[in-house]
Length: 423
Image (cartoon, rainbow, N blue to C red; front, side, top):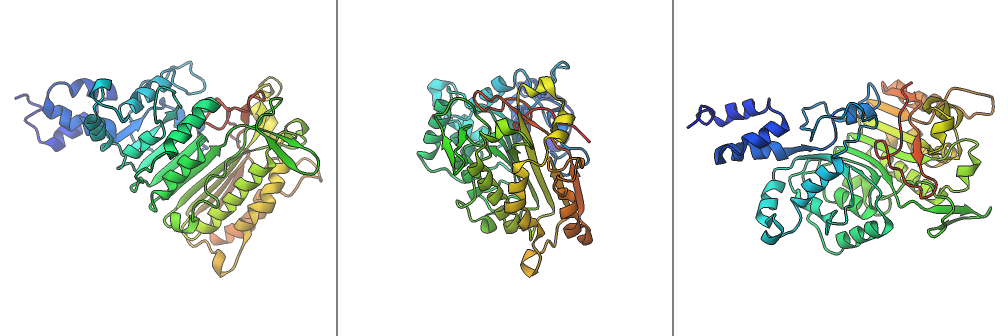
């Protein structure tokens, strides 16, 4: 018996906690005893982003960041990697997901083995790719029955892969994730998957939705908005309202304390983009925001609203981040927010109290005053409602969203576009 084997499990676990992920994978091969000890440590917290990813894309001095806890990253970040995406992230994520496919011995991953590993997973955070080699990519998540924290950035595949994945997922019922407490979804997430994750539990305390739908083109015929999925001349990203009307929000989120909502929006005087904005989708997401706010304000402690004025990729050559956000704020998307969501914030009376609220943070809504024609800053509207309650109300310039107008797809950043400027 080795000296390590002679120690109590608590001491051995404490010693192992100082080792990196790779070291633990080597150590667990020494004997069965160490494997039984280390395997739950390796799979309980699965973080496949590169070091610095979350710190780079967070807003400073805010509660809307990932908990500051130790995370076992898959590898060290390349110092020259400016967008904080690990070059091996897709490969690592795919290898991880393949462990839990509904497979048999002939596939190299027996069902019993995958099920045993899935029981260890409590914390899961990575970039998700709709890889066509996975038979049921979305259905794999149903095996993580002990999952408490799920954070995903989903990349856009192709229409065919997307449709196949959704059809496969909805073809059979899935056991709900009853232990889920933190749910953060960004990027191209099918509404069926969002509804499954939310309807499966009533214990969610931390909800972040920055969900994009299928990129489409929309035409304005001056009398109505026509959304044509086949129109190929210009596309824009659009927000996806996945819960409104499909979920009883008040019953679904009785414990919610932190809510962060994010959407893309077109910009001031940006006539090129305004011709291809899905107004239907924008109004739908703003109504969902209002419904979520009204349903959860009895328990909310922190509310974060984030909108990303979007620009074509070509804007990187003509505007820097800061100047673009200053010049193109207060567009039609701001007016729709004021019409459909702002009333839910400003309501008062017995049914509109905020007994637990500590902070309201607004990103991408306000810019410096430019002329008399600019609307009143959102901060000046919201502050009088909440500051008498002792609520910390802040507004900063926010972030832009870069997209390719040929297909409307967001590829970089935190799942919702390019870099971020800190005021």
